Length: 404
Image 1 (cartoon, rainbow, N blue to C red):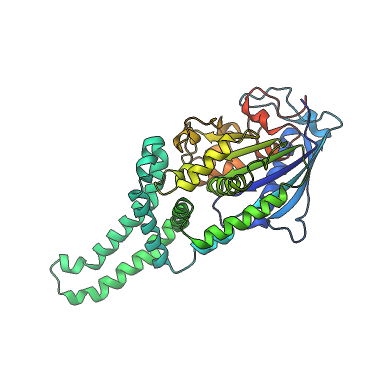
Image 2: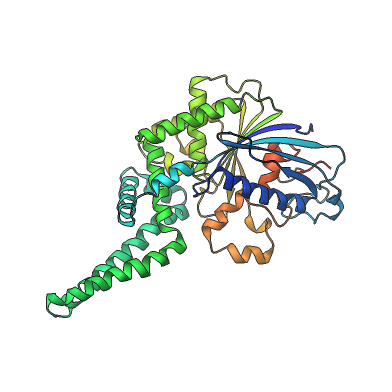
């Protein structure tokens, strides 16, 4: 198998309040973890001056630490270790974050964020999204309901505290103390508690889901057009392989952007080796809305493009993805080639102690797709985007991740 010498990566980050520089710093930390585990060398360069989206170069190569690399875990062959002399891979990473949209959606006071969140909840229910979530991935349906049920319960308790004097038969004048007490409960009790579950951040996430499904916000549509132009420019760079990777909500952004390019230039990927890798994808979070006709059409364009190999990385212990759900068929394209599912286990990537520490934090488990490993495992984000082997090797659990 011919090793990759030059790669271009377009990574569409998930819904997090992180800009390109923060995502690059995370990538560097994860890459160093991966290099230590597999025994190769890695150098993450500084951001290119004036790059938009932020881009940087990653150089990986055979390292002297190969003999000390730990045994493979979770199905990777023991001989699949780093260190074969003479190989070097350069990858140009373009970090397509949507921090500007996250900041916009998180803007406003707490009351306006709560109202907007419940409005998006109602829109998703009315458009059949919730029904689709429970039909295809009931755990994702619970993920959808959780922040709204939690906040609704807190609002109900707040009202109960406010009207408590009336319920006890006291004079309505007593509400002069019960009203402020109720507000104190909500502001100083519930809101800090809810931040443990990132409740208002999840409200914003669902607002973005509606926006990317309906495509009815001019600011979002203009931003997608701008990202499409930037990605088009990045694709002009010569490379052995082009990896378009995305995490969580970023998969919707990636599908729209790649779809826009295919609509305008159906032959844009001709002669290129392209891998479209969706990690913990949330495409169906938006595509299951009845209004998401444009997104579903773009999913079909990507699936039918002969130059694109679509890898859909899913995880059993991640409740925030559509595990074993065929994204292309459910998006309405049963006749199109389906994305190749890669089923991973987070506990194969981490030590037992580390896994026990994070397993109850679903958002943390959901981020593991793009974080560094503790152990050699069948999936490694750094090797997918900067390793010497073609990204397609991740389809088979028995393939070597490194040159033998």
